[in-house]
Image 1 (cartoon, rainbow, N blue to C red):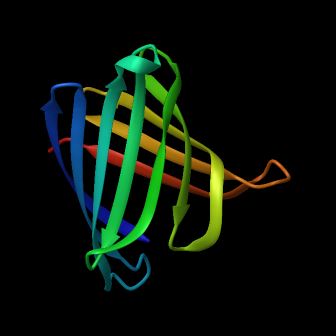
Image 2 (image 1 turned 120 degrees about the vertical axis):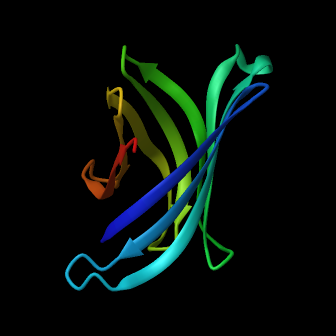
Amino acid sequence: MESKHVLVIKKKDNGLEVINNITAYDAKTGKLEYIAKRHVIFFYKINHKNDLFKSSHSYIDDKLVSSSYGYATGQTENSIIFHLSGSWHIDNRDFHKITSTITRNSVNSMTHTVEHPNLFGFNSFTMNEKYTLQ
């Protein structure tokens, strides 16, 4: 699957709101597969030691197809790691140890990797996204 993402990022009082408009294409044929929208909120909870949280909901044809929620567990100079729980329309399982890593590769690009481990420690599936500022 190949996709085009258009992000709108807005600063809010206690964090950020990101609207990600996604157009997905079949990687082999180039045929349009779907148009989706992902709504992500990064926010601080003062009553949780001011920890950073992430909440995400994705929709295709205005129907909820995935959701995740969790908190930041680590950071480096150019990345932040979240521990999430969530579910996805492509899998009937709920995941409770999702790792979401957002890395700023340069001034104009960042990557987002989401890993979903299974009971045996292998990844049930991984999602890799690369964003380039245009």
